[in-house]
Image (cartoon, rainbow, N blue to C red; front, side, top):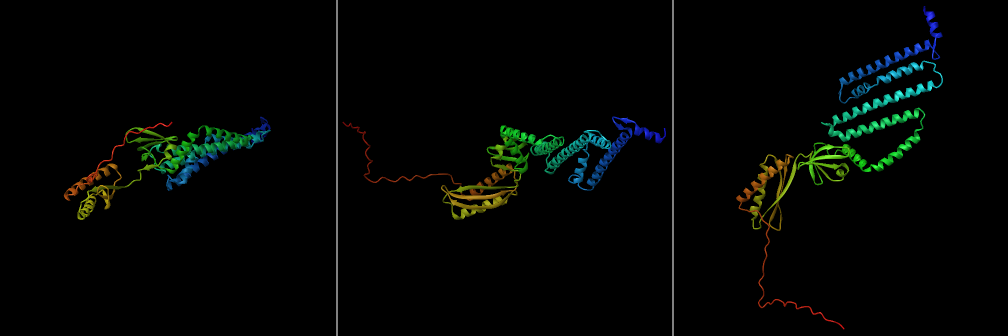
Length: 378
């Protein structure tokens, strides 16, 4: 069979109401489209990888683009190639409109897949950028961020697909709004904790591993969840607190503490000479300045108290550790006791003096009241 007869046969032979020639052209177009799209995807990924290798691979947009494009669905590429081939055919009836709907479906699904992959990558970048070392540290922020973005993305894709196939989405969206209000009223306490966890994730009043004091609880944050936060208390037990209740209280976070400012008082008795009182302040200064982990601020005879002369001492501990502070305070107290002993000045102790006056001559106590007389009235 020569070329002319083969061409005539292709134009004369029909399958499903279409000539064999048109079917062959559609098949070739589909194959070529698949190969071109596959090669373009491979070129784009290779190009993005090369650009990313020349810059910071952890922050550059080229690296993000490469990883997003690598998530292109081959099944959707095959569907796009078949639709290109179908567009080459003279389809009867409603098939052209259905092909257009399939085009929109393929593009919408691929955009959704790209968006899902980009969301996962952005959340991972967020975790790495904020120095998270374990999944529990970003359980609240990363989970909520990923879930919210994916839900919004796929809800938009679904509504777009339904609108494209002819579904009236106005009533559908209205029903979703009513249902959402009903669900929100039913689980408002859970939603309160959910938004509180979002506030913790965004504002970061504390993170996993921080030592905090909230209310009567002091301990290390173990996990920040969607509804609760778990704290390992100093006494050993685990305290589970609602995120909403947690944010309603004042939180003391010791994570950024670099030094401690310490104020303490002591008293010496009245009768101490002015020279000795001045020597006490100088002795306190020498004691604190001799400590390498302390920075002296001031030591003053502050007031004439009820039970003695009151001194106020202020110094800075250069290490945030509580045990370091207590060891240093003990050394200062012992040194202060020795310095007062050397000055022959004791510590003042609370005392109360009662002065009893002598009674005047001839003083007699008043007579005791007699029994009450109860009368009757006619």
